[in-house]
Amino acid sequence: MTDQSIAISKELVCKGSMEVYTVAEIDNLLEYGDYWVKGFLQLSEEHQKLFYVGCSNCHSKIDIEDVGIHYQCHVCNKNVVTTLRPLVVMIVNDHTITVKAIAMGDTAETILQNSISNIAKVTKSFQCQQRR
Ligand SMILES: [Zn+2]
Image (cartoon, rainbow, N blue to C red; front, side, top):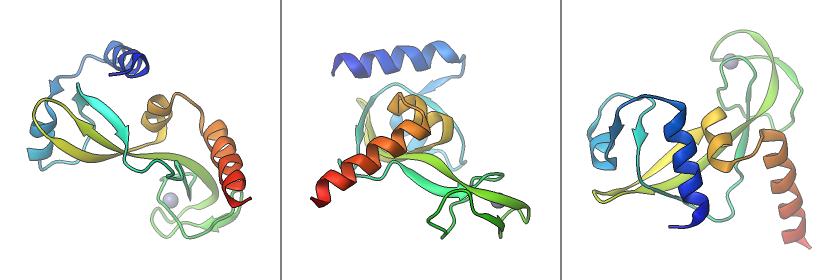
């Protein structure tokens, strides 16, 4: 465990009073939702994008690549604007099992300890360096 992962755990536990589950218990739950686990996080892929373009109202992923485009969302049926949404795919494990998990929105920003604008800036800069 790194010092950084300890700091993230303490910060998240202090924010809420929800029950803490093991990763195995979460894996057995049939209901989609937000749950607290105490374990270790690791990016599932080192070079993942860390964001997607989605609806500004319902946050559904859409097939438009540009941000700030006005369109009618096919999920919530509202006239909205395309926006960047944070997303991180992780491997989560504790003493029970290891699972792949996805964090989006505020949760992803908390885990990445950065705002979506900084996440997108850093990711795009890194992708440009990789192409050189
Ligand atoms: Zn929508």
